[in-house]
Image 1 (cartoon, helix red, strand yellow):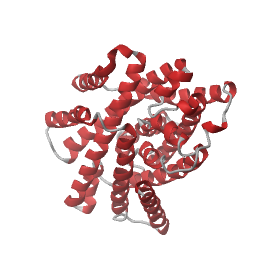
Image 2 (cartoon, rainbow, N blue to C red):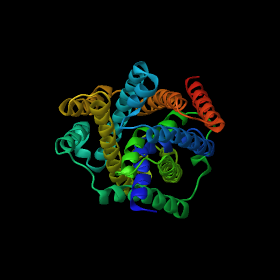
Image 3 (cartoon, rainbow, N blue to C red):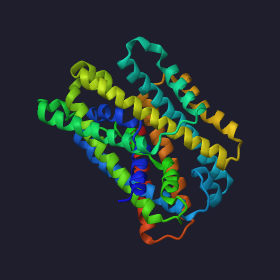
Image 4 (tube, rainbow, N blue to C red):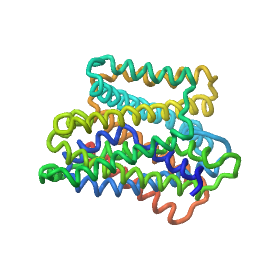
Length: 363
């Protein structure tokens, strides 16, 4: 496995793991852990199939674009604006979730910061943008390594040293987990950047891109299972929506470890989203560099107006609506390219699964 291919896998992994990982233990606990875990694997396959469709689109199209750009090329300007509105909603929801979680983690480490945490989050992002901060190649490998390592360590600790209680795993089955899970598995926006990483002056190769994306999604599913199981086991009935509050009751040390882990993860995910937004405004909408930067930074600022909205509501609504619209656009675009029976079969299967999930979540 070349270093470039490994970088591409880790890019899909880090570009997918964000705020969702910290909400999953709570919704899994309240949905029946085994029930939710089975659906996590199934939705992992759905997400992987959708990513493969998008990989084919990206590798078959000249130039670098985001979904709005591909929608305009293949479907026309109306679909471009639908994709644009959808990405704006997704970005607002994701950034709000990142800000809320980052604030929780920072407050757990430094209680004195209190209500100033959201402003610290925005200030750090602003400094990163002004300084054109980019995570170098070494840290781009180191960060996903720790994101993988921490759930593994937590899993083995909880499996060996914690006395398991039946109530920690088996609540009445429900679909409370669905919106948060599909949101946590969404990694479409990072696919064009994975393509850039793999390409580096070489012709686009669909299978290489799709394979890197698929392995990245598989790592995400494994990480979510290990992390959710560990947090539910460590926290028991005290499991909280942000992971950390519940851990502080039973495992203060791990609460601090998770807080550091969470700060790094949410901040890295926020930078990814800002980069995606910048590319959208600069490449697909043709705005100037300064306007693209300003509009990208507006999203962290807007998170302050959503302070009273519960974290689970933000993630569930964002996941249910935006992922369905993104999937619909990707499949419509994919149908504009040469396709086989199996392409059509899996495309319809993905839409049926997401439609049923959307219906179940709102019933």
